[in-house]
Length: 311
Image (cartoon, rainbow, N blue to C red; front, side):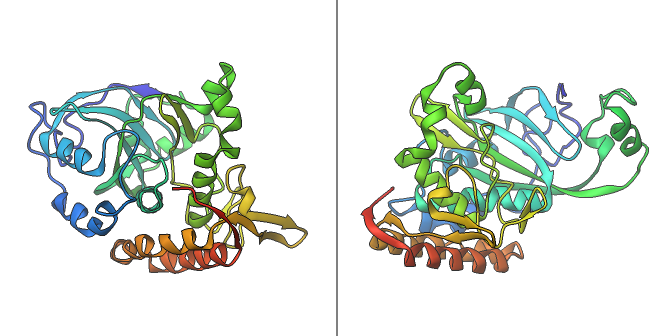
């Protein structure tokens, strides 16, 4: 469903007032830049698609100029935003754990040079189902909607601000005959996205979760990462999708690491960029996610048998 955004609903968000000012985060956005400066200052960590992390921060600080339709659902919503300084973004409201996955997955992507949008973690709040879907008529979403609407239970949600990507999701581009959407997993950039998904245990790289842009393929939606299961199937700490399959083989026991043509020196060069993210994982209470990610990195390193460099 979609609806127009009421700018009075979340006054704590920067630009959440009609004048585009007055909103506040619990923490100065400049702090996010400082904590990942080791990533941003290196060869990797600079977005090649959409606004950079610094540009996204400047947009937030300038306030909101224009908002688009909110696309809502049972547990999340997304809305295009234009800031006063002209920077465009997408604001997502996600259950806090999913928001952390989206944010940390975006940082991992930046760390290894993968084509992903810049991401900033925003305000944490308590919302009910009705808060997320205030304009949906009672019963308009079917039986599930009717049951959830009468519930007063409030869940922990967090805003995520992502750089806006110009292009089409692969599901649309593929139907339109776009070769890029169909061949993406086999390309160098596709293999780089696969490396990101293997590191973050993201098996949810369906055609709705990557985009075809004038500048190439871009991975979006990292909220499925850092999860022990997808669709009820145990992942055994690994990821399996069309992009990451070159890193993972399967047998009757489940996913297994496989030898690749990646360069061992290249994989080793990623280590300091990933290590620079440890403070953010720790700050958000997910040092276990970080530890598991580095174990997966070590397995990828040990199975790198070639000379291929992806970024």
